[in-house]
Image (tube, rainbow, N blue to C red):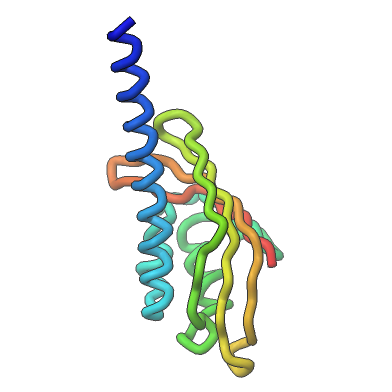
Length: 139
């Protein structure tokens, strides 16, 4: 019985550590965005041809996602200040996580005005840490 309890506690602690690691990816995204660094922001995505971003259109592959961000938020004024709220991280086994949340962009009228919406992300644990493999964002 004691062995089962120790194992359960270890699994719970491991899950909490992984959730914290996934949250750090999102925190790092906000930091990069708010200093105007799109290249660093997009490094949170897996550099692979099969990742996807679904918004008004579907972007595929790392370069496609980067190009999408550059086209829509190519300067600090259009980027504004990013905030993530209502974050939920659900572990899908040891190597995958589902992330739900809300984003808010504070921008001037010239930058496009305020924007907000919801997102669903899928992250995968890789040798380089947690990386986003799918992003569905709507506003």
